[in-house]
Image 1 (cartoon, rainbow, N blue to C red):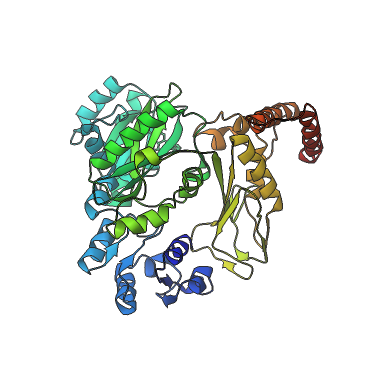
Image 2: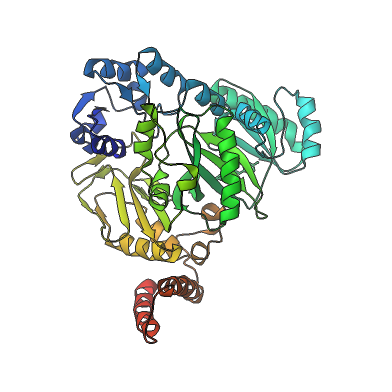
Length: 483
Ligand code: MV4
């Protein structure tokens, strides 16, 4: 839906593909043409390269946008498009391949001067790995080179446990990825996941659109993203942006891409991985930069120049995205399937909803559980949070369980409101059953609202009574929060 919208704005006609489960999906109706490509399991439809290429040939398509998942980071697919005379709207097969292998990616960007976590080089024997581990210091993470996104990662806290962990990691990696290359990295704890959105054209221009804060995730599934990050100021933004651009240049990167960093409490940042695709959370960057990232992808793929220079990138305001998933936050986030009966979307100032479902659509177990993205924008983080609380309250989804209560609970969380969280927060310190003490909640809300009020006053002439009047509204909301 996101990509079709960009195409339609640009006057590009569109062809969709769909499986059995997606027969009634909105993207099928929204596209100019739609082709059925097989049964519901993705292995028999969306992941079959030949079926996709066949639709491209039959429809006379010029280019393929791979979306966010499925074949989006598959170098073989990008190459097959190229061989079939089609434009793959994304980076080169070479860039996908280099960044797809996490150890090769690490080596490549390190050679370009990008900071990486202390760790091991490729090609070490098991004995050499043990020696290197002592030098790096524990705790250590054993990572699979063919893994990524948290797959095939295991923590080791003492040298005595390392040989077994290496052996197990290799076995697992071989079974999962047919590749048993592993490497070691020092474990960086209490860290944030900060990523930089990049755009690169075929004329050698590479720009950073600033960072996203993506620490709020569970089992490597992001749940809430925001831009900018509470932990990044303009000086750090510039430095980390330059490093990200250097990482992309190391593989002659073209199109939209993201460099993931870990940032520790001292604000040291380290390259983790590159995502060589458009990401789900690109929306928050769009709202704070005013850049339509998908339209830029189209321009780039047509050989045109980026529509703006690095000097023209300005971060304005704050955006937060809540991923709305069909899952039960009160039952271990169990996926929920069934017919969507109601979908009343929030609207109004500062609210964007990107959704792929509508009433009458059936949520099946075949694909992931994300059904919608709720993105709120404000001049300040406080304003964005207040709009998110309002929008979550407006949102009505019937027929399946959703994680809306999770997001509402997060928007009440003292730690979220004060920006004090890391990648472990959701799994280790956040519980749906234990709400935080009301006094902490009130203090946190007051802090956010005070900041909001201050920003509202900045540059305005206000009469002395206005602060008191607005406080009334806040008190009346507390009553609703405590219920
Ligand atoms: C790490 C790390 C700590 N230290 N590497 C997880 C996903 C993949 N991109 C790499 N990941 C991590 N690598 C070192 N050396 C912690 C994580 C990590 C994580 C990173 C980003 C977002 C969420 C995470 C959750 C758990 C672990």
